[in-house]
Image (tube, rainbow, N blue to C red; front, side, top):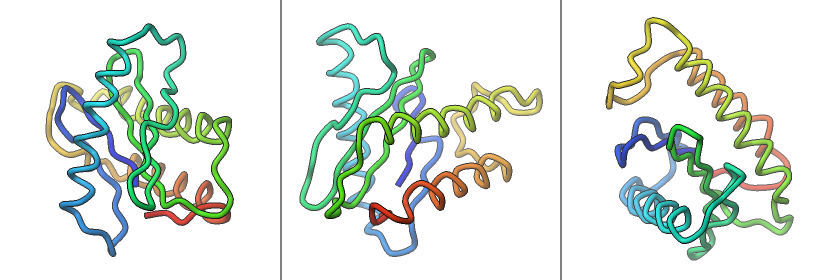
Length: 139
């Protein structure tokens, strides 16, 4: 699951069809609060915030862009854990897709509406399908 927050507002979420949306909404909001707490406690030089927490069988990772966009990835824990280097690469790919969206002159970056760009959604789907097919179960 990939969720993007802008100013505490959820602007994009990528859920599979079989999830409890209320549960993931709750997890996403907790994650957003944890990102805020983590960045106020210390100064981070890296956008990658690492593993934020584990709840039940889910691992929650965070990333903060220089423009304060929060990207949260929630994965089902599997036998083969995801390495930090792999997660950094995945977050960078998501950030690049988001940057391409923002660079579009027809996109309103001040909008709080859900992102509906077909190229953005296609880019995120490609990241999900190539990054999470072998080692982890994508929620």
